[in-house]
Length: 482
Ligand code: ADP
Ligand code: G6P
Image (cartoon, rainbow, N blue to C red; front, side):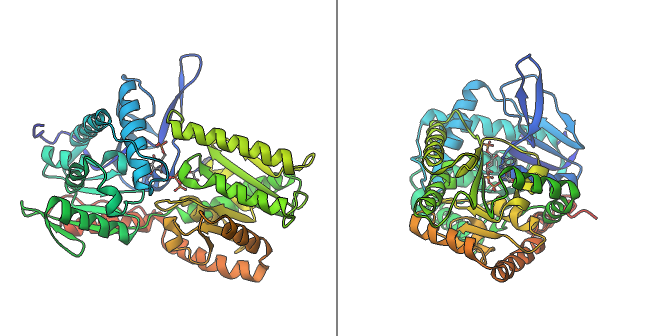
């Protein structure tokens, strides 16, 4: 790779595998742009809106002729992937190797050398685009597990840049990470950044320990000292949501009306349980629905009185594990409804759909008990969105101990998602809790979410990045809208 001269004009460059919009081909040869799935986009979009930045990412297809474009005020730079790269980089190394490994081996990770080769090639493409887009001394913020080599590649191309990296998913325990045949390259890739951010402090500690053991650099607490004199800091920055934006939406008349319509359409049950997830094996959807169905079968709950609404957005559907999961859940829901539902009263109301934010807010408003039970999750923004929408200080949250959000939302009904009986008890407790108890817990959680919103997250990351490299670069505006 050669050193390229600064040629871009962006003072802030976001580099993420996904653009905030996805290009979805329609049958007639045209295409439309839709909002991309997942928490990463939810979190970064407000930061970008506060800055004149560029966002480099993949628009989801294999078209090679897409030019940079503007979408609702954001400058977007599409990266092209070939069909083979989609298979080997995205479905392969990112989602067949790293995703399961970093989520505590919730599925078996596969190690293939050609997947790794594609990962290197695609990471280099992102790094070259970022180098071309960034102005002299700009800040480049690289995101997530798909792009862990970009910081080092970018630093070689543009030593003038201030580079931050943030991992949105968990960083695995050292003994799991060490299974990776390319462990050293990934650590060195991340060390190209000035600041490496994680969701939780334990993840940052694992990273520093691995750097010491595997790369041999000197470390002290959260600092890594590189032989070239640079210092890299690793720290936790728990991500969040635009809490006020969600609350304002939830308070709107349209959303309130829609929430009433949803309750009505469900037959006005006394309690609505809700699950909202990407259809991912890390989310614990199967076990959660089983736990609920056992409560119905035992007579602790009754379909005349309660319903479980599960929204599951199809995700990564070309990856085999995801196809198997989708079939398994389809079958389970069919069986539960067949065995336990009555005419006009399904036990589970199940939807494969992606909704606009207004509809999400209406669902959160309609739901009495939000059920979030991942086996492992970096943060889980759905839990925080639910809390942000409950301005009435009512509603119950059942939350997995293994979601990053459990560190902050201590007043939720915390559960071990591997323990079906424990989940059943927590679901029942949340169902039976009186208003006083619900309010006490919700008030405390709302305080946490409103104080630590996405603007605070971005501000603290960017401020720390500036502090690590003070002599360098231009100032980036905080995400908080004035
Ligand atoms: P992940 O990033 O693993 O998908 P998170 O819970 O952190 O999990 O983030 C999911 C994000 O995607 C949230 O902002 C949520 O509102 C959004 N989302 C999830 N399901 C849907 C859906 N069916 N329609 C629209 N948005 C969704
Ligand atoms: C999680 C990951 C993101 C990813 C998103 C959606 O939030 O942390 O990096 O973009 O899931 O997954 P997808 O594979 O559709 O981009």
